[in-house]
Image 1 (cartoon, one colour):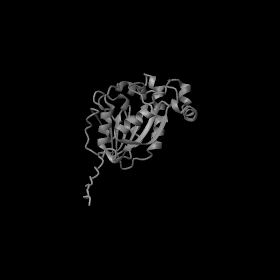
Image 2 (image 1 turned 90 degrees about the vertical axis):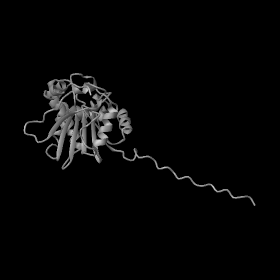
Image 3 (image 1 turned 120 degrees about the vertical axis):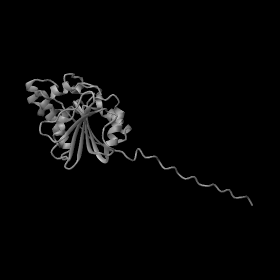
Image 4 (image 1 turned 90 degrees about the horizontal axis):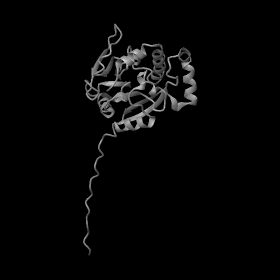
Length: 236
């Protein structure tokens, strides 16, 4: 992955970042209202969002790319953070019930390898939730935010990538119709932008959100049909 942790940290420490995180957390919570008793992994720069389930989960881990370094949790938190290479996650197979991938897929050196590792450590009945910049939205071209870095995706591109990684899309959502401008009147009007944008400009959302599950049957070889013996009768 190629990313600058300082850009993400500075953004989420600003007023604009705080509003952005709040808007995204509302949509994430609508998709995953509870993670009670689950093991949760966040890949990328996920700490602003993992707080939604940190107190419910039995284990909550934030994993960041090796070159970014481990992101510290707030003081007093019993949860963990670590750094690792995207194609070699330091976890056993089938280790997590839920995986949140944010500020990760679009920055991956090899998105397919990252999804392959994600597939490996996710339980067979687990769920993957991906947040990526929308190719047709404004946020993908604003480099002062972490959404303006890496490769943005359209809904179709993300769906095809997931299908190739043996995932099946279950639900889609979008967020961030608010212009990516650190202007007070814009930040105060953020809920209004979200309401109007969702109804009138669905294609201009800043991010695309997709929940997927393992398509375990897609990776199973088709059983060969046994050949039938052909018996030829002698002519009388």
